[in-house]
Length: 84
Image: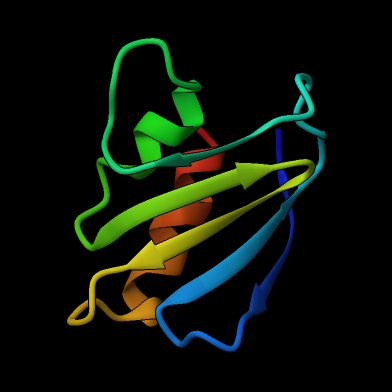
């Protein structure tokens, strides 16, 4: 799975990340921490300091950051998580 696009949202703490593959089960899930049984890429994103929650639906995720985190620091790490 690859990142196709990264888009700002009206909420400055949230970025929309469009993915190259759609979710297979046509459901939506909000994740708040790494846990067994979750998609590997979701758990890798929670290894990044400053990621608060992730909403996964269709072919995108919305990543919420902590208030004190900076997108300039987070986005390269998010991109790296998809390259692992």
